[in-house]
Length: 118
Image 1: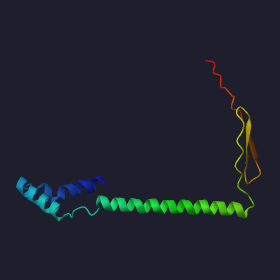
Image 2: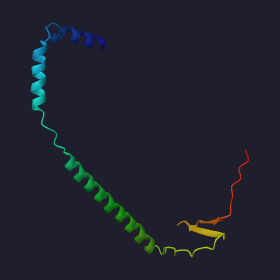
Image 3: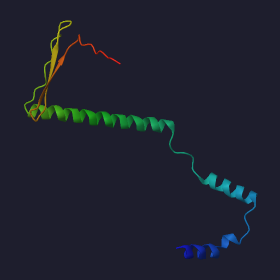
Image 4: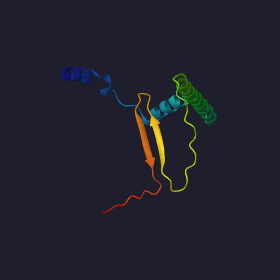
């Protein structure tokens, strides 16, 4: 590989040619920059694209939520009723069941105080 690289470097005609004068380089640069079209993306276009993306995300979210709710109803899982408000200072429980049958019960004690000893 090194031998090929050396051969290519030795046969490169650019190394033996004189460089272009600075004004020719500047003229070539201006020609290239003038040929580049102005940016096609305007701020108004970004706003429209963002609005379309947000609408698509909202529609996808609503579709996923509707599918989840429909699959729960099909499986016979009814949404839990809103719990009654607990009296002040009364312990409450939060029940959770997984589709596999695991039941989790949390007991919430509003008088609980975490005491740190450091």
